[in-house]
Amino acid sequence: MKIATFNINGIKARQDALTEWLVESAPDVACLQEIKSLDENFPRAHFEAMGYQVETHGQKSFNGVAILSKLPLEDVRRGLPGDETDEQARWIEATVVGQKRVRVAGLYLPNGNPVPGPKYDYKLAWMARMQAHVTQLLAQEIPLVLCGDYNVIPQPEDAAKPEAWINDALFLPQSRAAFQRLIALGLTEAFRARTEKPGQYTFWDFQAGAWERNNGIRIDHHLLSPQAADLLTDCQIDKSVRGRERPSDHVPIWITLDA
Image 1 (spheres, rainbow, N blue to C red):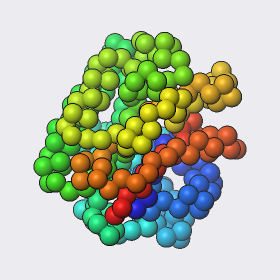
Image 2 (tube, rainbow, N blue to C red):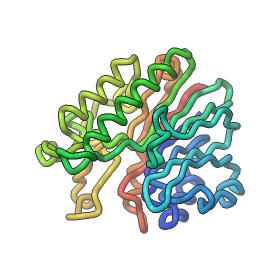
Image 3 (cartoon, one colour):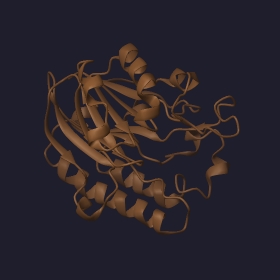
């Protein structure tokens, strides 16, 4: 089972690029972030014609997440517990029915800038709600994959210029500590389980020639429950996607599970 995550930075602008990547990479499951579309405006029929079941949790002009799956999806959930009063669409989860059943959650974690301020308070509160929900999911003792744009740079080696991020919400000690609290629940960070090499990034800003100078950061992650980590066979970043026409500022990252 190949499970990818990709912050597409707007389905309207990236539909062709997303389609091209889906054809060549052929993930069984693709979790998308920043679709920036209401559910009714998402080009569902286009991706259904490609063989994908489409589930969205959209929002006009901002945020929004989706799951595209060639395998059957069951028990779809939109939003974290506590989202009843939260208008931001940032979480979707479903059970993927392959050779084994895998619970997959696609997430778009808040950016949190500027710091200090209410946006950073919201980021940390959202991460705390996520931790509480993941604790409940882990208690089910099934393979669990939590993937998406975490907006967290876990370690200095995950940034080309870590000194430039010292005062940014993505790299503040509180953000990294909240990420590590998730790991401490018993999760495995898939990419680092496969390689410890520095210089591996999933995001390059559109400004100041960041892509050309490889001034990137790694903020898109797959976290795996022990049951999913036992099934992990690979994890790769599709870096070349960033150099194509009209790219997102993120690139896909995917895992394969023996499931």
